[in-house]
Image (cartoon, rainbow, N blue to C red):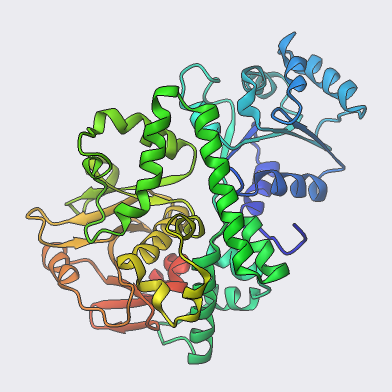
Length: 442
């Protein structure tokens, strides 16, 4: 993928390497988010040697774990198999697609307990699904990291626009962004909405600038997800998985974006579809935002588990699923407003889930008359966020929330420039990934 594809998770991998409580690492993430690439790059740069084993491509590797789970025996077998001696501390062992091997997963426990001098990282595209099953491996014996599709700041880095990323990351004022930069960032954001965060799509854009082919890449990734349904899901769940997966964009396009099972199929009941929904979530393909009506911490305890919205993990794949053609890029801000602002809201969901990392919640007043797209927990404070696709925002819901809970500030994100207007702080959509920094300025 070339040196251009810098990933923010690299810093977390370095922390893991140096941590006094380092355990074997499990890197989770949806298929095609770049797990193998980043682990190989990390191994090549930070270790004297890197030993790579893939349980999907070479299933015979599993047999090396079957006879004995003693770490020294496994290291000996892996060394013989790869024809390279594996050294503790100086070498990195990568176990890829580890969900294909129960024995390898269980072996991680013994490496943690008896051979922690070996640095082991494992990855897999359906690890979340695998690990949600009982008895898959002993909890507490591994470290976890999650890799998501590339964010807008990572996209800026990939596009050789690290200067713009640095500028936003260090911006130390609530004054508007200079107009020339504001317009340039909106233009880059429009491209990101089409391309999304899948590394292969971004790489192709950088190298070829061919939006038609990028859509083909999206379609291939979507096909690989469908194949995963068929190969790895319970047979009874496969039709339901496909129904939910195909229905996510449809439900996001509705004015009220709450996910309704009966909208998939008239006779659909939530209990029949909950397993399929959880599978998609565990596979990293969808995110859920839960409804809450109170402004108290922690939100997790107040969320209504039966009332939620569903977002796709990648905005580029969302566009591919609704057959959004590249011609939309020639229209000024049409992309932001299409599908009742579904793209804008989905973009916000994917970035908010990663940055504060406290889950996704939206607010509805007790009488259901007022609704806000997200409730954020930033530095121990709850703040309401309204997402608007256009540039003519008006809000009764923010006023209603203020009346009820009186937060220190009301947040809104739109295509407009950074500006504080009384109680409302307007954050341009491209600055949303830096929202924690902005909150520190208030």
